[in-house]
Length: 325
Image 1: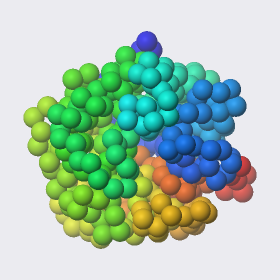
Image 2: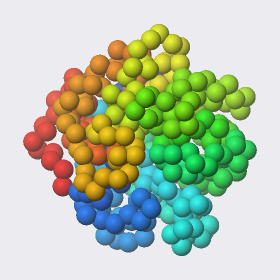
Image 3: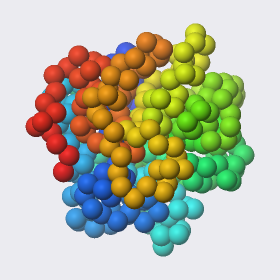
Image 4: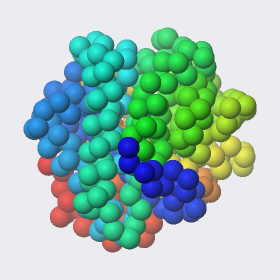
């Protein structure tokens, strides 16, 4: 087990600005030409060439962060590495444990090789039980805590600094993951996705979902994020002075303005416009006083994240020198 370097002192909670990565799965599929069954990037860990592709992906973000003198959070490629999805891909419980450990170990190796005087936070990535776009099966908090508990335990024992639960579609599953992380003493960053109306796929208002999770007696997440949605989809729900806005500490947005349903049917990648996306993030900072983490989701790559860092945080960035593969 690695000694958790930042678990008790996450730099983003001390007003440090950090970048994170972008759309791992869409990058692998559309830029690298790789097949990801069930959108499961963790399957790349079982081959040398797959691990090489993952390292190249992560190193592109490391280069951006270093060029801008910013810290970095990298999430493991384990969004789908839980029992429901793994079993469909022929992974046993032990296989999944090893895949989750291998994904974290890769990030530790990258940190050893590249961390300088800026923080390099290692995060274990958890995805939803069901479809990331539609909560067709809603877990109770107890069911969610039990289901996600194995992956949480693996990450905790591996020594991650934090856990990121990404693309959550309903609050009760989020509560369960929060409980599982609290039991293991690992900080949780909880990221909800929203539809084009700014509401969760369950129909719940974003602020109400945050309030529901924060009201649980186990503990509260370190902060919240919004991911897998374009800024146009949720900016309007941020344009107020509600207290819950101060609980949002990160954004991992889509480059595309398409709805989840449209993205599900898309056969080509909508990369959007990196500079336009960055300028929209700059406007969002006016509504989110605790926004400290900037990354991307579907359709984004290191060009988008680099542009966001340059525009929002005033750092220099060479868009031409860091083209996507």
